[in-house]
Image (cartoon, rainbow, N blue to C red; front, side, top):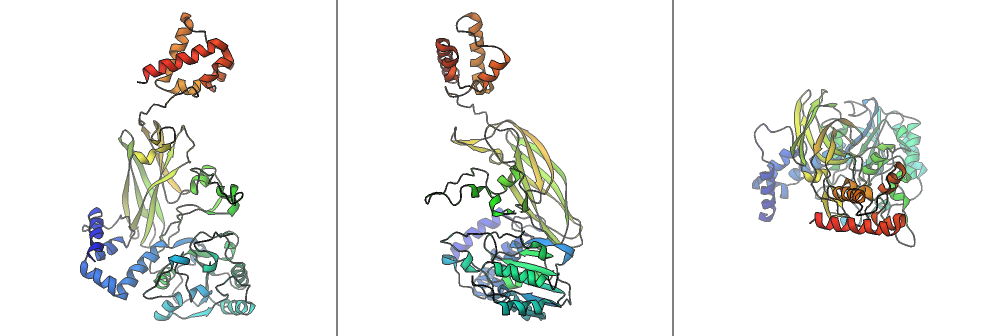
Length: 498
């Protein structure tokens, strides 16, 4: 246990718990409670050995990870006294872990149906389908439709069985099994008040069937306390506050990796470069189903007073005010993206550089701040084999997803001052824009005027031509005179760049 306590001590030093500091913390609205419990040896003993404490903490973690994707007509939380139908085998046999070697042995497994029974909530249940990849069972399907027909709200537990995703093999589709979609459509034909609760370890397509549901709750794989966590969210004990860590595309073929998939002769190239996930979708303005960082709440929030100030040559601080504009206590995750201006390399439209989850009571406001270091503005340079920050203006965006940006503030950075290494393959344009290279270009023109070197052609067309031409191509343009100019430039650069 002492080995476990040591890192926890370091954690509580990094995130000190002081009276009144309740608004902002990286671990979400329950983070302080978790840290406080973990910091006490007596509590640690209870957590380690007592199922109640373990289940409570795991439930908190599960609640924070769920993402509410859709909530038309405020169908969630389920109203008290509503007549409920629960459809789907996942409600009784939860998918709580990954496949293969990620299997775990839970100390206490709690399904959603277990939790309803323990809390005295009356609900009709029908499994609807089996947790395998076999064809639909029409008897189970008919029973489910009949069970759902007269309910005030239908909670449909759909997702991927373990046979559909695991380590050791690739998924062939983003779709959930067809028999589950068919069941959803059959139930929707009889009852429109449907909430789909998804169980899956990685992204599934939502667009093909979303019109059949008023609510969609992405619960992922919730672990052993998933049942109680789902009940807490579905019945409004807590508001969902999770955010998508991936983009959900409209279609799998929209993803840039599909250009190279499945590869050739057993070989796949990762050709996306830096344009992975939202960095691709946002840069190229591709329509998506749900963007990176997205997640609804039972509350509403507003971001205002977005400001940025330069704190060093290449560092900045951004602040914003977040306000809970509803009558529901809840958490919002404030996200900061950096958008570079003109760059020497291909860069995404913007990149996430910080986020904080802020818990606010109804009507409450808090200021959040982010200190952005040099790396927040940098890109990796193959030429320098190092991180680079270019001088210029950067937009610092603040929002609640990569597509929901409330506002932005500009900062002008000095850059890291690293001179671009020039070679015979560098163009005249690159030489002219470089602090040292521009002096060499000026010397070439001066030497041409004095007769030391041949004169460079000087008209609009030739200036455009030279701008894009490597200097080692000068002999093609000016024969022996071009060779002299190239040699002169390389010699002068070697002297000045020392």
